Length: 608
Image (tube, rainbow, N blue to C red; front, side):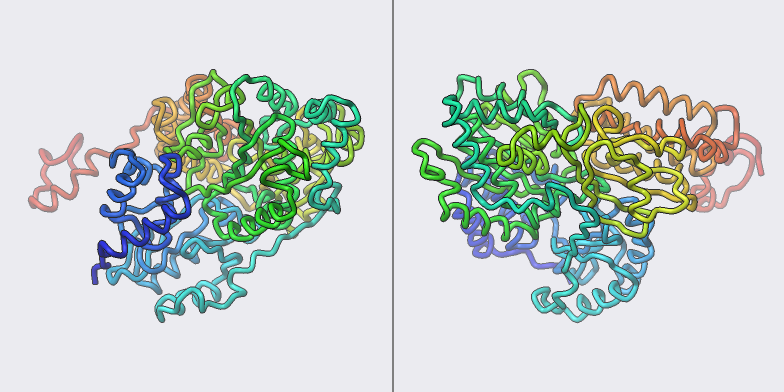
């Protein structure tokens, strides 16, 4: 049975509804496409043409956007779209077995749609549920902790064509496992407290918004996304630009494998995030704000929108915030559509503008020319939460925890081989060993801190500390015990980066594919010492020549494991010499069978 193509009436209705929500500005191309697809299930050519005409952009531009984002579909995906999270921690917990079982039960190959058009089955990158692995998305809705029984229950519901609105509600419950809370997760901040504190501080000092910038600088708040740029310096640079209006952007595109702390903050502490964004708007003189919510967190959207509405009713957003004339600021939520590279700030801004998320050339910096050419600050979820607390309690209070260089606390997403996966909040300076002990990790041989783009450390480094003076991290903390093959862990990350490369620059597009192929070659027993040297050389080239941080980071898991776990590579090497990765004579075997020839002339090299 071939899936039906929506008729013109259905297409027009879906596009019109999306346009009613977003308007006809080209900057809303991605959002209009996303909402149209939510109604139709996919994006037929008629819908693309209608969107292009309504937004006054070329059909080529629209098709380019659809092709860029993995959650936009130009072909039918079935009434049920099942996507398994493919992070390494999901595989460690049996996701491959669940995928195979569901494939057999549903009679559909992974990566394809069933012949009757009922269901498609596939993999996607980490969906932010590493503490609930293995996990999956069904039509965008998360289902955590999918054991064999749950997988079978899902298959039964799909085969019976039960609408998802009638599925058991407990399937979709995502528990926020807070294992250790500190000043951020325990703070009872009430909506508006930080904003009023910022206004009062400016009044008392007589310097208005500058007081907010000074307090953030004095607190020495460093960005919590991992790079650690000084937040106050970024904000002040933006505030000094002559161009207005200025823009505040919250990067909630938590795509780094192994990270899920922002999911907790978005779900439980949305007011704190919006409070921090509003404080930032006061500091830089911004009137417009955006939350860029990753597509995998679409299920959090409705609650976020309700919180924004409540804040508007309380005069904490909109015009004359807290009764202060001229303090006008509002926030809009844009939802991504599946692209790891959009976690990079400039790529995120490109996506906000409705385009493909290709990282920009720098200079200019975003603080000078960001969203639509306007001065823009981009900080992550945790950074805005910290900023709100600083304005409420003061810089001295904030610096009272952590280290001299790394003030405050850090949220860690702990997952993998440990008894207690979940969120842990520590003052900066905590040792890796302390985190492992608290999480109930045993026989640990390696920890990947900061996700694949971070650092992999071995047992002799567990006394090292989380902080910008030692191990920087955006929050991912993946634990591996002695049962794990560190070569296979690194090979998985090589595949991840090759898949997520946006393809814009040749070093990353080609280099990540070459690294993936080299790791597969070694896995297949065709590797040599020469290949290990090539991996190191490619790693250096990627770091120096890539357009953005994705390419710069792509070789790190390979180089780290080569340095610390080299025997895991070398025991796979069959030859000290160069070994070809492609068996040309083997590739001719099919032709020999078809022609009935097996003589010497039908072989390369020696006859059998």
